[in-house]
Picture: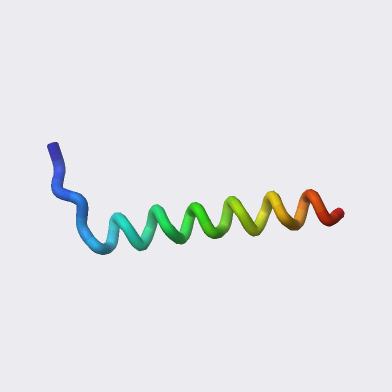
Length: 29
């Protein structure tokens, strides 16, 4: 089991934000 680092959390958060932004953009189009 690997340790979760701040970098991993930030990366996951960034991916989540990008996914949400993409969905919002598609729903607006």
